[in-house]
Length: 372
Image (cartoon, rainbow, N blue to C red; front, side):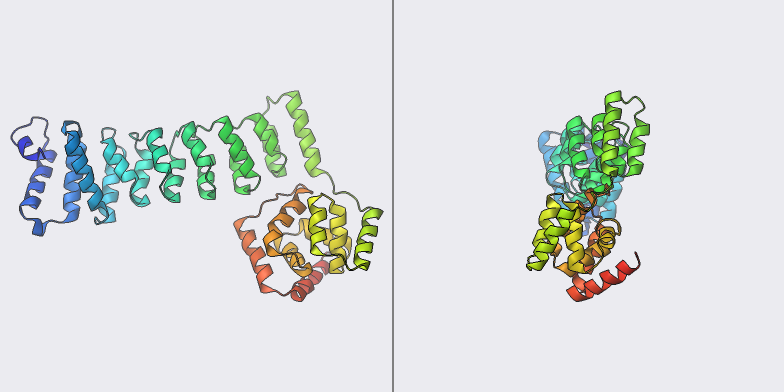
């Protein structure tokens, strides 16, 4: 390497460079006393300041030294180097990329702050780094459309939420479409998306079909320039999601009576009519299986939270694996958010796993009495 020739009088060397090279010379002279952290910092410092004067072979050698040492060097040393280089606009790109591909504690300051990193660099990182690295990339200021598009394909809530909350992220129309569709199932994305000032109005209107009343009101206030046609669509969507449930029909009662009399009223029938949108028949049949009043059961199925619904499903033999479908479809008919939160998923698991069918039925009937 050129360290020895450079010592002979290269006018581009600073006192820090000379110190780094002197330290390397000492370490090389007595490798028994050499500490990996010292070598790592000395090589990195020399690389930082002399990158433009190094040949490609010397740069490659330095990168390899740093890469091999990084696993054995204390985290604090690598973090310190990353913090130092994150705001250095003259830092060698190779060194920045090496740090960005390190453990997230080392990589985070570089990913979030280094102006050296380009969108191309970020795209190459996204292929193989951890979820925490992806979150940092999603939080980086002013990420471009291609980076946003790549991140939006991820299914991690943390990554998606970081992306939609990044006000400076340049999200393109197609990527917004992807995120909007994901917000149907991921309620945590709905608020941040609706509050973005760059959300296209047609996609905001589309979201009105499944977001809360408060978010629909926010959409109306956020788009005062909304065209008459768009305003009419918003009114139609609002009326649809707020419409009362269909009334109980005599035909539904007769059908349920007939199936019950023949011993054919089973969970499969409940799921079939629910998928077909026959909410009145679904409620009547569920009430018959539970031995409860249809009006009380309708409240339990559509308006009383996850636990009563999970217990009701457990009572009649609906399997846990289809509970999320029952929850979603039973809520959509009444304009309630159809998405289970992680906490609600845990509550449903407990309800299904902690009680027998008869115990669950007893709890549902006790709960129904409080609704009378």
